[in-house]
Image (cartoon, rainbow, N blue to C red; front, top):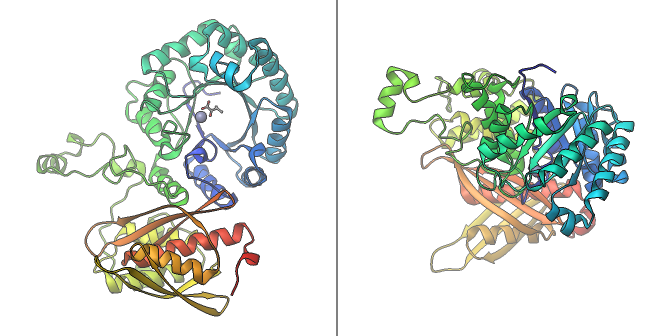
Length: 512
Ligand code: KIV
Ligand code: ZN
């Protein structure tokens, strides 16, 4: 282990997937994992294989394909979970099992219904068992920050003796304050006799908005691995945001005598991809990756930045992968300039079919808008790249709406060459259109979430609709794009249905 290196353990695919209303299938996980590898994270926690067959298969697929980072599978301190974790990651180049058990009195009494001695014994037995299968084992005492310190030291010492290579200290409920958490880590170093045989890791939740600050305080006090998630995704208020931890360490290298090996120029791309796939929007004023993170509104600030960038910018947009283009693309732009721009935006090595499709969509859009922005191109590209084969296609829709009339919508869908038209009323044009689509497809779904935002600015901006539908307790998230927001919504709804169709065979459910 390099002395001054901070290892970045990304848990977007595991704790991040525990974000309410986020559900990732195998392809989603693979697409995110490929980008995390480009970002050069040290560790990818790919999932919790014992949780479901789907997650087992997703973790296995990530372990088989992604070669450079460690691939971690989470397991409760149970033999079955550990076996499942190992079976899912055994083909990884660098596999790691992450065993956890709660150690606070509260969790032991009310959740586990176990006595401290039992938890201690289970820790030793299960860490030993994990180590007998996998060369690298991480152990987490869940709810560590509300655990009696003496018991915590005892459990950590026992876990290290049993073979844990990494001991991870979770602030499971985001209860700590930075100075307190830093001291807590320092005391672990002082009181766990064999701590020098393990790497200290931290895993902070953001319930009080302290996850990043707590992680950094831990780093200053000897933690060498930080668990974090892109865009701060995770259970409840989320985990420490990877991009913030990494850029804080980089930007304040005068304070931190350590560094990460993250390719920070990939941060923006990773953030956008995770947002696209999870359907979790990034707020505009989000640190590092928000749309406004490098935007200067006040005249005084603009003037300052024009004279000397450092007056109001502590990092460069380029350092997080934001590039400004000086070539404006519009309806007169040719394929060559378009492909070049796509490549500059990071969409390299696309096959000709995909390029042709995205170019066609670009031309359609350029007919409607004077200039097509980088955000527009990125949205078109992502939409095309992550599109599942279309079982249902929108051929046509027409709505009649007004503030004093009932909205009605007529929709024509195509399915394998067949056309089906249906009409419906609804509570507004979008509701009426969704209902007509459900009728035409023959599939009933529960709408779990729906929102629309503009890509870029101006009244001719593209509308990007996100729809999450639910069926059989699974959530399917998809996006739709159009300068017309009803059409964007209809496309998103149909894309979500297509996604669902591919995952759970709905052929039986479709009737014509
Ligand atoms: O928050 C937590 O305690 C966890 C553990 C499984 C590490 O996610
Ligand atoms: Zn967690």
